[in-house]
Length: 185
Length: 279
Image 1: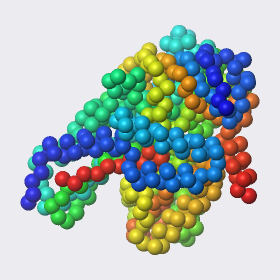
Image 2 (image 1 turned 180 degrees about the vertical axis):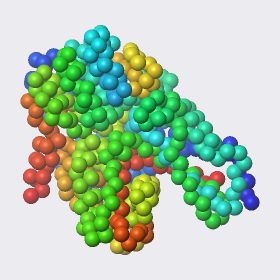
Image 3 (image 1 turned 60 degrees about the vertical axis):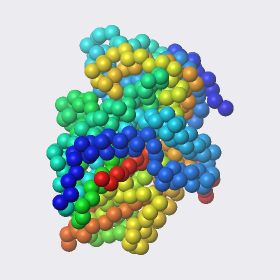
């Protein structure tokens, strides 16, 4: 059974989530990947205001394809998260509570998640066409010169994701594999 | 000498870029469906069902299957009896430029690896030329996503490492990649040649249809054995556990030096895209 989440994602909400939970996210999420993260963190270090409200926000590691006429957005699946590991703790310290991506995270990121009560969600990698149907609106809000890597504010309805690492550090990549292998013994 | 206009090359490449990115090949679809039938883990079954839905939606609306529409790898087999009027290389880049623009595909190429400014038209393509007998011109466009490309590795094994060393290395690469390259993956293995040739044939292995095996029974057996071992690791679709970690392992081999045993492992995701045209 899926858990419905509405943004902003508060730590009251994140604390109830466990690795392996399926969720449906409704509200606003922001796309940002490599180049945008670099700029966000550099801006933070200079003490500048970020172009998005980071407190209780969800960042989606994604760079969509351009929208075809009549569609809100093109294909928009997750990119591999570890490339954002260097930047994620800074953003969590500023209030970021949710990250959507795919793949492993560093121990530093997991520590920061535990400290800040943040969760890491996985969306289905490579299912960009399917996921695009849950996006109602996409608005470019910063770093337009980065093209696909610009920050977009997405309004999503029932965006499907799975809790991969919860705010206690439990990790579905380890648990899921171990449970499956137990059935194969 | 047969003459082909470079414009025809541009048109073909344009169309292949769009087709490859929006319409998954029948061989890959069949592989995903077959894996779904054999998958016993419920979470994994659900993900495989969604991958089927995903390629159906992409084809229906002609939108990209995956937002990473890749670097355009273009394989050109050019007959010795063919002359291309105009600039062949520029014609290919122009085809990529037009295809990525007209097909609403993502431009994911930076003009320099360290200074990193997006070229905004997905050029240049990565082009591989082969000169072959005859008067044909065959072009294969294989958009390559980098989530999986980043998980690829090459190792200069010692001859004494032998077949076991190759197996161990391939399995190690897949294990280390884990959930990162969007499993279920397709694994291209290149054994032999030189440092660079091993990598090239590993990439070529990824455009061999998934319903084919290496014609040499020795390597066919290796392909089957590696696939079986990979699918016993338990990584599963998206890394959430399950049988279906890989759809297929394709192995290619080349003669090599008495002192060497190069082995390249090029990982691809379940969106293993390639479309070809013969001019």
